[in-house]
Amino acid sequence: MNHTHVFSSNLKVQMNNVTIGILLSLSALILLYQNQWALGLAAFVIGILVMNKKNRRK
Image (cartoon, rainbow, N blue to C red; front, side):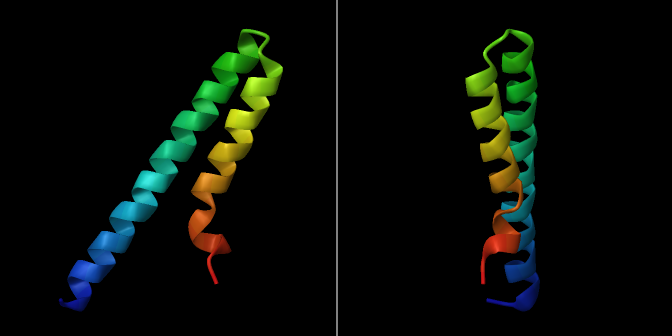
């Protein structure tokens, strides 16, 4: 396996995490708007954690 493939694969995973994080954040805003603050807060926190998953890995 060459280095370009590894980089491309890692970039795809990172982009997928950001996409999932953004979708969860949007879901959180919708839930907050509908007065479901507990679910909205949980979705927002999970979205932030998913987006920062790469940074937490050591």
